[in-house]
Image 1 (spheres, helix red, strand yellow):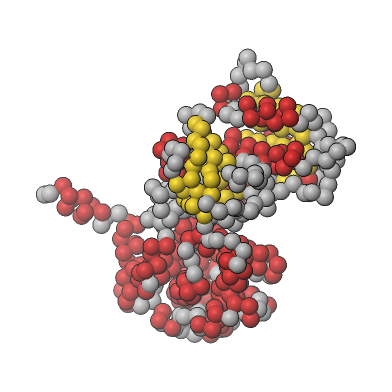
Image 2 (cartoon, rainbow, N blue to C red):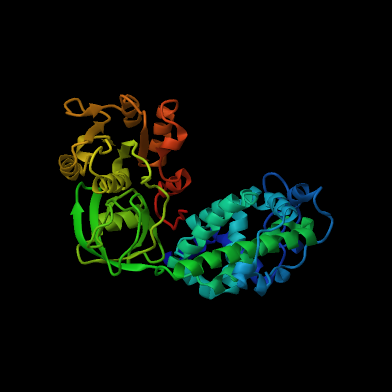
Length: 480
């Protein structure tokens, strides 16, 4: 047999391939799904762990709505056009609607993989032109969508936080090319997925509640995107003007945007390379704003990281990248004179360096804030930015630089795990602590300093976003 034909035949034996093709067929033919993921007219019994989705859905909705009604057909699951159009006029959903959605969301939460497979199968079957907005690999996109949806549904009772999160999503999705007209097809598909997994337990009350909540989601995102469009572009084109490879796996890139980018020290920026279209990565900006508009980013090539490897190993001065809007809440408050202790692990030095530059640049006459930087790595050859840090120290005498490595007998600095070394800092009185690095380092540092540093004086990026960024970047990921 022809090897190419054998390869094609073998592909059909891969479970994920068969499942995804099946979901496409179901979405195309508008056949309700059974608990086993097969069309209901072919179903004998469920073979999924935990039994039938329909039983789960009934248990989830019992007590808040009649569970005996028959699910409507898929083709009826469509948000009203008006619900997503009048963005400013759509208010938060009522308490009863929030309760119904949170209860019925148990159906999606119990089977996230199936729910997201169905959502995107339906979206792309009914709107194939939208496929071009997404990366080739959808695995991380499906995971990120489910995580964000779970966060939104779980936080429905906190109106302020929900609106802030939806606003960030609306603004950040502009760089993907998402327009107002794209929201309704996505939320239509999500509504259909919720209906399909609920099965006969889907009720008129649940349907109305989901429509209200999803209409509110769409309207809030659209309003935030419209306001953002008045203030800044959806993306910038940047030229790499300097590529400084500090180690085999770490490079410092200096980028010149085609237009000024307004940002606060401590924020991160989104970046896309031409080699991997529609795949965006976030990197902390490593400098305070400059008069010439140049920005620095520190990049470590991680195993399996297609974007980070491209930036470190395959980019040169003169190459172009696409930049998204800055984001992130890490910042030094201008309303305090407290001293700073900064903890930086690996390329987590980038936001710390930007914060310190801002403090140094904004120092006034009289008392200047003392700054201590603990910068750590496993080995001394991974302390890739010591020359720049020494220059900063010489320019600002109140700055103390403490290099730390985990194990190196003849090292001139401190030796040990970075959180443990930081815990031995003489005093944290009237001090703010800023931590940059992977989620594991931040969590370990928080534990090491518990009891010595008040929670309100310990600052770092979102742990959820950092955990997502720690995964190999073989597919798109979201960071709020």
